[in-house]
Image 1 (spheres, rainbow, N blue to C red):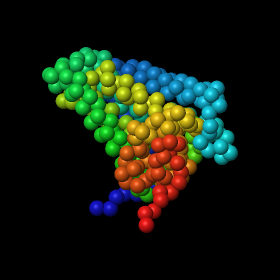
Image 2: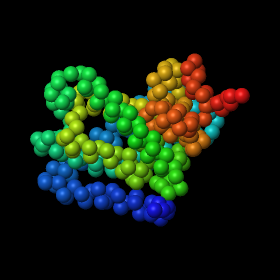
Image 3: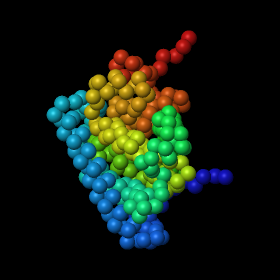
Image 4: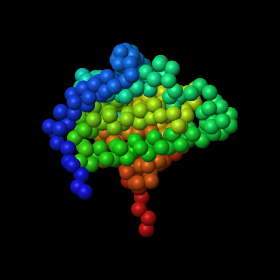
Length: 287
């Protein structure tokens, strides 16, 4: 079966169609007023929190006089307006998805998140079970995000991702500045919190989600922190220098959390120098 190659016109339709459809689904919730109130509150927190985090990241870079990843390639804030527009749309979509499990929680319904260690550890009360679940979630999410990103770079779906690559020299605002179509695919797993068969221990997993958001700020900061660039590669965690090359070269470095899949599939453009971090030098061929 041949895949459908989406057109620019279809992408433009999705820019208003997806937010409209997701808003309409709120009417399906048992208490529509609750859903829309939750949606508005979550949007204020998510959009406002991301903007605040981006502002702090930019300020820290200026105060610390950090080295830019792409010095001399245009102004770092030339496309700030476009980044903010895309960010607002992306947050709208992710908020419409998050409003479902949050509304359920506020209504006292059971969700995948729990404050009970006993419940989250499948009745064992063991932190080893929590740790194992965290490992599964991290590697599962990283695998999903990597291949989602690779598919978005195919000719069939690139129209939904192309706008993100106008930010060739990104700022932290570009981290979540994606089209509604890409935002839908990226954050669709959030609905998994509505399913109660696999429990997440909230004191551990929710800070983990926050850590991913903080990492995304750094990946799109437009500058690099030498200490982080040397430390994070030891853990196969993505860095600003590593991800910035994706915006510069487009067809490399697809990892959004870890660099593991880039290393496995050969989509990294250089080799890992644990002394200097990621070095843009072609791998040396063996004789």
